[in-house]
Amino acid sequence: MAEKLDTAAWYRRFALVETRGYSPTYEQWCIGISEDPHLLALLDDLPDAKRQPNLLLGAARFHGAQPTPYPEFRGFLLEHWAQISETMLTRSTQTNEAGRCAVLLPLFARIAATEGRPLALLEVGASAGLCLYPDRYGYSYDAGPLLSAGPVPQELVMECATTGHPPLPASLPSVSFRGGIDLNPLRVADDDDVAWLEALVWPEHARRRERLRAAVEVARREPPLLVKGDLTVDLEHLIQRAPADAVVVVFHSAVLAYVGESGREAFRDTMLRLTADRSRPVHWVSNEGYGVLPGVEGALPKADVEVDRLFVLTHNGEAVARTGGHGQTLDWLE
Image 1 (spheres, rainbow, N blue to C red):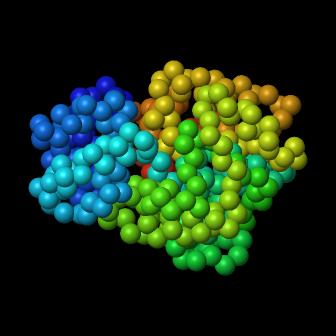
Image 2: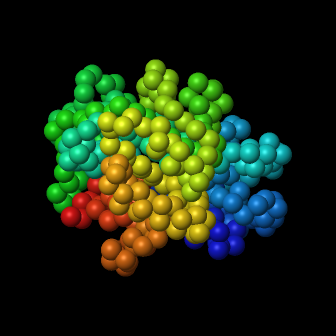
């Protein structure tokens, strides 16, 4: 895990594994930081959890950093370090990628069909809750025809390439409840919170930025229930607020990497207990980086997944697919 790396190694690994081929700007910046003793010293003055590359990059963008060569970016960091470091201390990485609904949807639809009930979607680490609207977006799998419940803007058509035999739905499931839990929920009505979400989108990803803005407008018309709380403590209280006639689906995507090992294990045990209790149907859908969810990594060939950036999609603790980090690919394993 990242917290076991020194800062220079952390930023170099982020550049070479996470950003290479995906964001030339961030690759250049993080390589530069990894070789810059002065900036590394500034970062090392921050708590471990606040030295994350994505957090620094987002905070810099939030305060106006533009995609420039590293020397100019370094000068910007030094000039604005007081504001940037304060933002790093008070905010967290809360990327809210609505495109991930494309890889979640097949499980959501299969659960709704199997249970014969509408969905009560409860997102752990919900950020602003933009993934709570899978029925409001459109989908095109393998460049096929549009799947939607009605007209949607092009920005909200999620394009996804698939392999294997995913259970692609013929129609969208009904959602009767949308709720989320987060240590620091973001509000789509708050311009600063929306600006923070935009700052977390990598500079070259204009399509994602447009999608974010369009998804924010969807959420503003029908705000979700977002509660401030800890996933290992407060989730069951949120489950109790879901309608009795709906099937509860607890889901999360790119969240557990920011939770300590003991917290992840406690959360896993809680979810396995809830899904085994048939007094009320509860399903658990996880979309996390390889090795993040305890007990799942053994289901996959390790040699193929260490540096490919793909996530592992699971249903009730069983791996069913590998997915692109922003919902762009779905490789079904079943």
